[in-house]
Length: 172
Ligand code: ADP
Image (cartoon, rainbow, N blue to C red; front, side, top):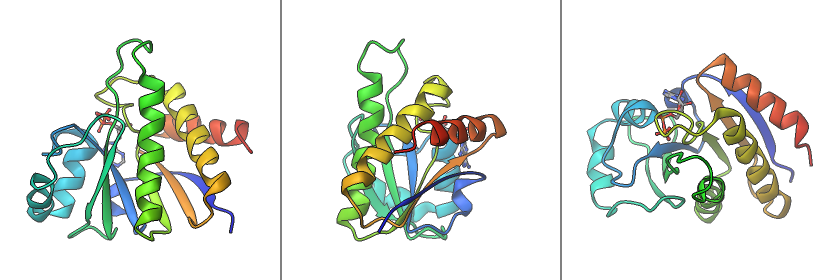
């Protein structure tokens, strides 16, 4: 099976994919931006489960249930804070996408939606974040064939355009 990669514009908390990915911080105890929106929509049980996880390292990911979300699961990943690009940020960002997809596959999930990890409060330049996201996901699905669809859920029209460009450019 080939995996469909698609960029859409919308609110990730409304999606009905098997999992949505949360751009969390290393405490996994909630925050602003997409993290806050996901916790608000999922309800307080999500925080209860997150408290049991012992945090998460930058570039890694952890799975929880989705509670009141339409998505059955949340994959929490911790993106790098942008420090100019010479502190391993691209590798760490790529690792977020890879680890999230590895966890999805290991859990038998077939559709996953990503927000623009690190491209908000963490300051990662949006264009290069989109390129890394698309390249990493494409490479992953070259050898792993159990995923039906990976969505890039953009909050802004500008981000959507960057992802559409990246998807056209990095066609395998
Ligand atoms: P980070 O700290 O990893 O940068 P942010 O939450 O600050 O995370 O931003 C990541 C991206 O998520 C930004 O592009 C932001 O516009 C987007 N975003 C914020 N709220 C939502 C939402 N409800 N659905 C989808 N994307 C969102």
